[in-house]
Length: 516
Image (cartoon, one colour):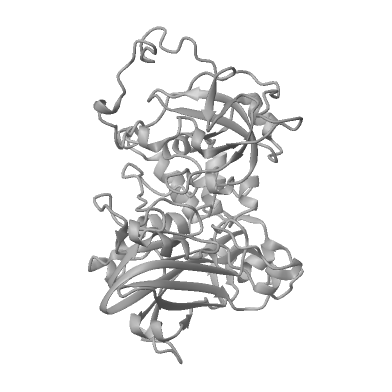
């Protein structure tokens, strides 16, 4: 590694997604390379992978670090738990158990926007920018925005971090590259603007062997124009920024499910515009790990890329099977445009077109785990098992009620959402404290009960109720609210069609099948 100017730590720069000496030596960061690359290219190019698609005219939605003066032109940003909001910084705080001589290693990874401009050659020898150009070999070249991956590695001894914050530059230089097109038809010019950034790392000892580690990456450059559009500001920005944290003599603590003795210290960690989770393979268990991925999207501890996936589709909002089927159904003209739009899109189209049937078959119906049969409650004489005829007789989401404390709550009841602190669905944290109306009481196949609700200030609440898309909570996650005209919960619902009982997932998941 080359020493950074004026810093006592060390840093190196490499292209993200490429093999490194660390990966060849089995470094812990290599375990996370698949997931980290999926984060890096999430939303890079969305199905149907064509420049003309409306979805691909608004890109780069996660982990965007823009110039601070551009972001705060209308006021300071409000910190959030993940990076869907534009910001000028990311901050990760996590707990780590340390041994003497510990070394902390950090990798900052992001994309730098690169504008690909197609230029046609004129009779006078000059070049003029065009939106598209077809060359004699039958290839169409399109003007489009690409991105270049960057990865910056930094490391310091823990003792040095305990003595004060250490930092290193992690930006990307400007650049220009010209590529002639066949037959002298023109050229492609790729331009990148400088993206300035800096990462600072510090540590604080909480107990004898437990420290709080802070990693903060900031955009440090000014905007060319604070009044420019977001599309223009992105040219100076870090895109899909995220961080890998590891080292020697360190063991990281889960912030999602920490060991009992460290829960209070975990609550003191502050994470802005990012969400740190433990890395590692499925064979690892417990509330600690050797590496942390701090990403601008919410993930579980030890996230994995599905082994059946034949390659990245850049659109993690959908499953591989659906996206592959949709891509297969593109017309020849649409596939040709996608191939001309971006080299990564061309690889997706080619992979789908040549996918063997046995590879495609593996995309359907994978089962990760099934709870043991002994966990299924035995049917009682009063309530037959759901799989038997008449097993759901007498159950009605529209009229059933369930006790929440001393209050009977049913369809039309007013409640306040109080999701449990541990084990709740990730999106529930955004709904904590919000008032809602119960749409129905659902008895799950495992014997538990969930209440479907619509959130009051959701502008689409009435539409959700119409087609049956609800949020689901356990009774102990709701607080009954008094009726506006007197005591007790309300039972005057909005007009809705009763929904059928939904089958549940595994009991420990605590959520019915079909949860939004």
